[in-house]
Length: 173
Image 1 (tube, rainbow, N blue to C red):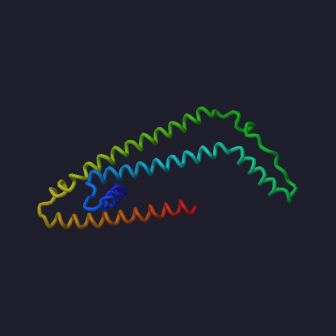
Image 2: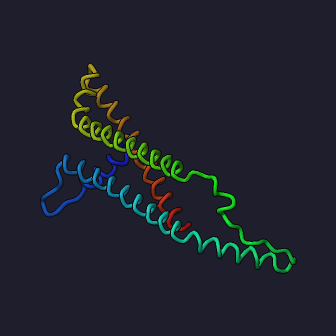
Image 3: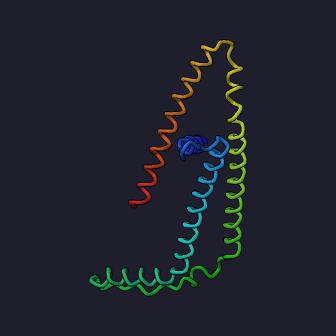
């Protein structure tokens, strides 16, 4: 939610002449950015898995070549391993079914989280009035707003730094 609020704040700062996006548009664009990000990451992971599975035989041959070269000075040899000797009894259809069930569960949970975040965003428009009704005096409310502002700013800064660090780690690794 804090990441979405940070994106909303960033989008709200956009000015084109005298026009600036309305709060509902900032919320919508922030959600679309998050969904788009997860879509791109999911596509990248899927294509990487497909490429690796398509090249599995090539990797096995390369690994065998590397092992042979490493063992050559010692005089030892390792015969090529036939995976069917070891994996013949495995039921791949049940394994694939398990993986697909897990993916379905993750997608279902992700969808529920999106619904929850959507309701939080809808509630964020009226939460200020509810918060204000909690206090008897305006001074108490103003003080609580100052504290909440500091907390939100600290959390947004932390998430921004963590996100940037994670992106840099991913790029440079």
